[in-house]
Image 1 (cartoon, rainbow, N blue to C red):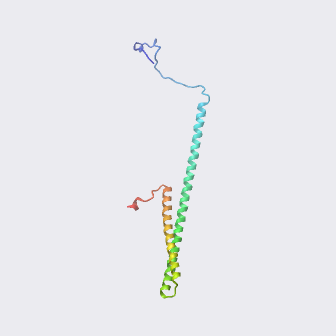
Image 2 (image 1 turned 120 degrees about the vertical axis):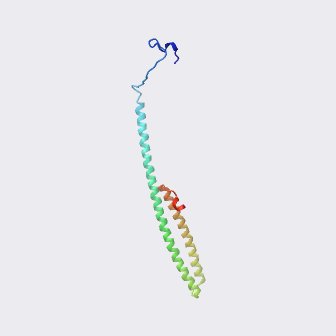
Image 3 (image 1 turned 90 degrees about the vertical axis):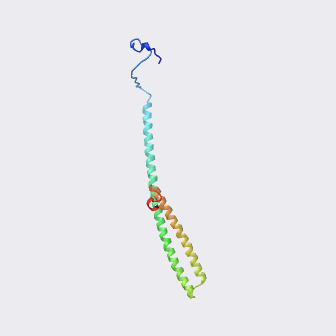
Length: 150
């Protein structure tokens, strides 16, 4: 507001400016404040529900990653046993062939199955590394350990 400087000290006749604390208190706002409060409560409940759903999703993801890790470990162990058995069979067939008792086609077939099993073993090792990395990420750990990388 505009004021004249000569009116600054004349408090009784001043009609152009005011000093003081103003207060506004609505007696009835048409239930606007109550509806805003209810909206805030509704938003809070919605956020709580989303938080519970996110926690459940994280828990399910962690369990799934753990189950996949256990499955890849057992798959790797099974493939290792298969490769060991086929190596033993191949060595027996090779010794039989070298002694003149074996057939070349049987030896080549066993060698082929051994190579396929070794490729399967490599694939199982890759899967184990991938599932271990995924489990570490889901649990919030770094993919590689800083101590083992040094």
